[in-house]
Length: 172
Image (cartoon, rainbow, N blue to C red; front, side, top):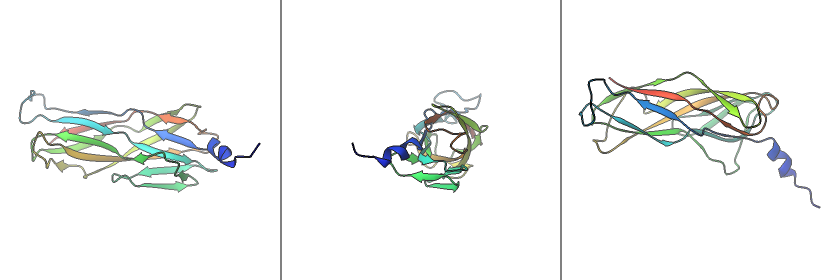
């Protein structure tokens, strides 16, 4: 029987994936479908922090609007084929429409084996407010990152952590 040290390390991996993302595009009350002032928001990609271990004291994992990942504290990012990346939305609206993003409150992610982590919504790329650059029916891509606050291994045991976050797109 051979020893597999990778199995021991695997026990200390936290796989984090935001399973569902809710977003709401606010349409002015005087706009009706087909109205040139109306817009639609489509969720294309979920925010995901990939695989990591919290280390002895935890810290943060940051996914930037461009999809890059960085860590602070004792968090160790792991490259085990688990993807990480920013949330991606597409907006369909008349060219030149100006939209701003209002981030909802921080979200609590709950672990499959207990524990919870706090998710703060990051900035967008392009930065808010922004102008729609592709005429309808084309779509303009909006990337949104986030910061995950991770506790130590006792507070955040290995597992899959999921939750929802909310953002609002406002037409200016």
